[in-house]
Length: 422
Picture 1 (cartoon, rainbow, N blue to C red):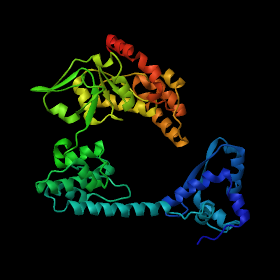
Picture 2 (cartoon, rainbow, N blue to C red):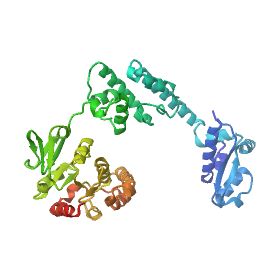
Picture 3 (cartoon, helix red, strand yellow):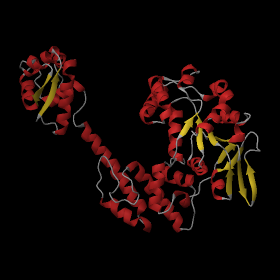
Picture 4 (cartoon, one colour):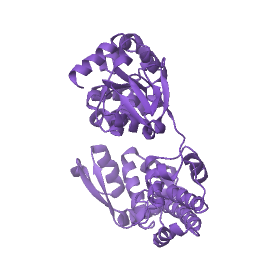
């Protein structure tokens, strides 16, 4: 147990001007296994710091103001032992901070032990799966440490352990089912492998597909999802299956089915994607819009099947989303998913400034500011000015509060896009 510091000594050492000194010394001691060796460099920004540090080291430091000085840990250890503290440097650090040294080493050891357990689990579940034998041999030879990495030549082709581990678990379950002649559903597999049916990510899908040697949608079954739409689109197979222009206010067509069965006829001028379902329905009921444009509900956030469908149509795309950081992110994801630019509708900076703002917590506002800041320089070009403004406040203006401003002029706005070729 570390002896206590005399109160007068603690008062002299526990000064704000010395905080950086003790912080850097602690890091050095943890690197040297608590032995007072080496030096640390300390900046001297002002007279007060020069005075406080000079008093500890027993030398004048006023000539170092605006510069740095080197502190030798061995010499400082001797000074403290010979002075009123009567303690060596390691004990002084512990007494001042209230934390034992080498906590980082303890944490690293704990993380290594946890990684060792997971490493062994993966080896165990790969055992007995012939198709995973090579991967198992690679993992068995890979080192285990506090920060774990996949083997260099992994068939998963990922450098992220957070992707690799779940992909291995899913692949082992999948191969066992495949070898028994059983086909699995995507969410079923996620529930068994990840203990959460919603934990598939794009990266995990790719790594898993690499491990099972086939595309994800061929390896597992996924429930089809409806695409809600209205406009000049006909789905045919021998005869007409569905006509999106005749349904009021919209029709739901299966995302996978519409791409794999029969063919599509669409003479729309463009596609208008709307984020929220109520706003989507309002648009579908407008006179003139769905006669020329195919209006599609964004499903809250563009899913892969929706984006593949939109990409296949190869039409100009406009989108109306909430005027917030997440609406901008949604637009960026949509552009990336369909491989071409998307023109924003009803998402001007002026509308955001004058619109009704959503009540949010301080934490929600902070999150929104961070998201907007990320898109202020690399987001969709037409929305970067809006992103800069939202990055300052985090405010959100939901599209449902802008019906009176956007809907009356929407037809004219889309006609302008047609003429400009946006």
